[in-house]
Structure formats: C-alpha cells, structure tokens
Amino acid sequence: MSEIKVLTLGHVGMGTGEVEPFDQIYDNGMLVMPSDIRNGADIDALVIWGGEDISPSLYGDDVAYLCGADDRPSRRDVVETSACKEAIARGLPIIGVCRGAQLVCALAGGRLIQHVDNHGWDHNISTYEGRTILTSSVHHQMMYPYDVEHKLIAWSEEKRSRRYIIGNNVSDPAMEDKPEAEIVWFPKIKALAIQGHPEFHDNPENDPFVQYCMELVNKFIIEGE
View (cartoon, rainbow, N blue to C red):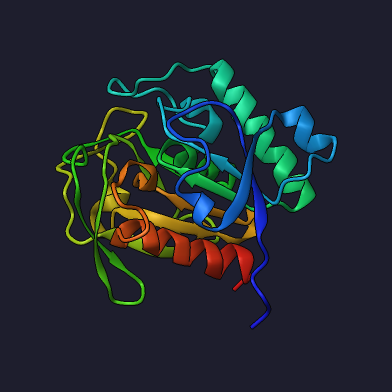
C-alpha cells in the first residue's frame, strides 16, 4: 500500500460545513470558486456540502409537488455544478455531503427521488462489508444511482419511506426492489457521495459514522481502490 499523503481540501464557500471533520485527513482548507479550480488552485479534493434541494432540471426531471427547488438551476446549483465539472476535468476527487451527494449523483448521470418520508432523524445503515452504523439523517430527497456505474457502499438498514415521489408526482415503481442508498462511490467522476452529515457529529475522532466516512475517503480517494 502506498504511503498516505497529507492533502489540502478545497470547497465551495456555501452550505453546512467547511473542512471539519475531513481535517482528520487533509491538513488545510481553502475557499474555492470554479475559476480557482480551472486556473489550477492547489487543492487535492473538492467537498460540496448540504443545503437546499437541487433543481430537477440537472437530472432531466420535472419538479414534483414536494420538491423545494425550481425548474431552473439556482445560483448555488450553477456555482457548484461548475465547480464539480472543473474538478472532474482536472481529475480531482469530489466528496459530496447530503445535497452535495445528490448533486454528484446527478452529475454522474443518476437521478434523485424528489421526496421520501422518515429520513429526518438518525437511523442505522448497512454497509457493503456487513457493518451496521448509526448515521445522521436530515433529508427528504434520495439518490437513485442504479442506472449508472456506481458502487453502493451503504444503504438504510430497512426501508423507511412509504413513498418515493418523482417528477410526475407518483411513487417511483423502480424503488420497489431497490435499497435506499446512503453512501455511493461514482468511479467515473471520482466522487464519494455521503447522504448523512459527518460534520454534525460530536466527538468526530471517536464517532463510528464519522470514522467510517474517513475510512472511505482513505480507501476510495487517497488509496484509489
């Protein structure tokens, strides 16, 4: 195994976090805009944080009645989409948290379920290695990565939602036999999509969910599995 380098974390100055808890891996943080990335800013990863719903136009769907976004991208949609595309063009990995996870899912060619129930509080997730971990959960939309190349890393231990609303305002029948995705790796764009909020957890050096996220950053982004 190659030696793990100490890297510098870049992020767009919007959303719920800045560097923590990824400062457990990366030694520094800086605010970046798309032009900074395009012009060669000295960063090794881009993190996109949580916040409001992304426009369904980014993944080719109509706006469902329970979606909080418009049919046109917001300013934040435009800035963060551009930042991600500049990072992808440079081969820089992306860490997407909550809204950021949903955005990278869309940019990888996936789509979103525009409304789900019962994901507004902490719950257990199951991982591909067979672990059960308690995750933070503050979202009403969900990644649907199943039509594009991806690795499903974690999913809700049991299905929590009664409905999976999409653009035609019906519950998506495609979710009948699919797990509720919580953490996904998109290899083509080097994006780790984390639906929960590691930045919300107390004692991040000891919290199982936070530490699992750090494991995944090391495994998929730094070591490049």
